Length: 224
Image (tube, rainbow, N blue to C red; front, side, top):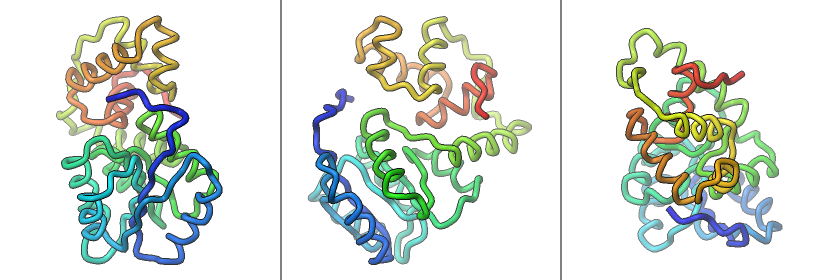
């Protein structure tokens, strides 16, 4: 994955069946010189059709929509367009739903009550750093860990990580960007990305959220 250019105008698409909400989000983001709204859809199927022609950097995806909801759409986006970052939106803050979304590839999760500043911050963060964790996602991931701890055999705990891998994993959990980590451990950003990919392979995880869950479960970091 290429390192994002901080001066790049981030192309954003939104899929939500409430026209007023879509308009509100578009209006709040239009004042941002580094954001360009490139597409909007009423449901997941419409969004998938648009993605054949328009490639946004970030998609704001509502969970509850008619015809094809966000739950069904997220895996399709990740399978066909793995470079697109997806921020899930919902009226609810159900921990089990949030945890599931993050595990299958969501880059962040926001409630629809989030202010325009939070939405903007999340868009920039997932574009630059692949993920945006907030208090809601942290609590949900930890809640997911507690319920899984007794019967989850899919996350190997006897993985042998090198000292450098552990250091980089801890910095990732501390929400440092790839460039910040590279500067701190005196490696190139490309090497840090390679180590991140290796960590995913070693730990059997598929997303940044999965790596964070692994780190917490393995006792490498604590998340409040």
